[in-house]
Length: 142
Image 1 (tube, rainbow, N blue to C red):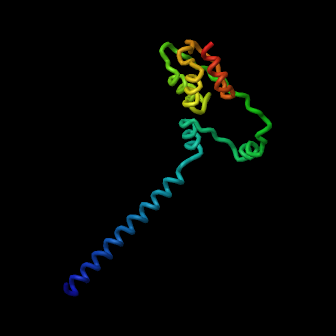
Image 2 (cartoon, helix red, strand yellow):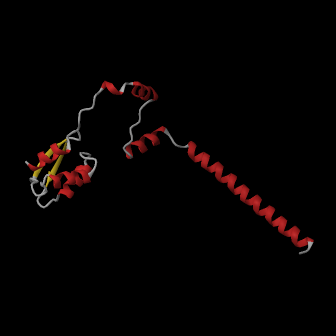
Image 3 (spheres, one colour):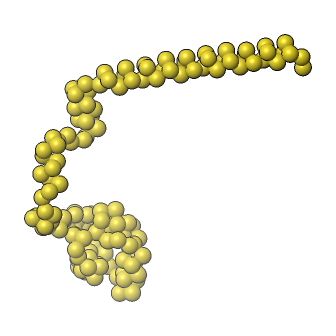
């Protein structure tokens, strides 16, 4: 390589870097202009479309400072249906899906241990997560 080739290569690199730098900074200016154009109305519309709830800083502070023990949550009731042909595993999966039990294996183990896998009754039942496995199995087999 001779001196002219090296100089031409250097000038080419410098020119390319300058062009890329100009494009980069031009794009940064466009981004900040777009970010500033979002209005309060846009934020509210976005929140409503995506099922978000907006509250003021004052209300948030009140909620944050309220004691959790002020309102003891009552156990939520869940209604499930058992249909003809459901196995104990199917029932356990339904119970797990609704948060009634934490482990399908323990439910299935209890059902097999008590030999109740064929005793489930078709119907609709109201259960709570506070019920023991034995109470749940008893409710579903009576």
